[in-house]
Image (cartoon, rainbow, N blue to C red; front, side, top):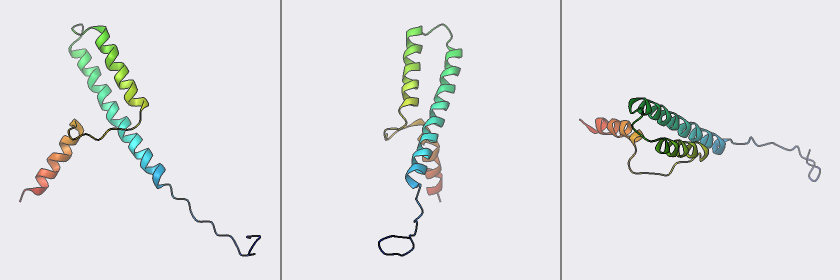
Length: 94
């Protein structure tokens, strides 16, 4: 009861939309970074011994920063947009 008006208090449900959106973005960024890590592991096995250790260290630092900073800057081109662009082009064809 509301002590001032003696009317029953109603609780409005809290919306979790901002947290849900943040979590979805976080999962997306983590997934893309996981794909990047797998690609780098494969690349390292392919070019074993031909790239200096300092370069691999710099790459690891860049990937670690990508995991620590959970947001992405909007870019016009991204390898992850290739499949979406292809789907859009195919949908526009008669």
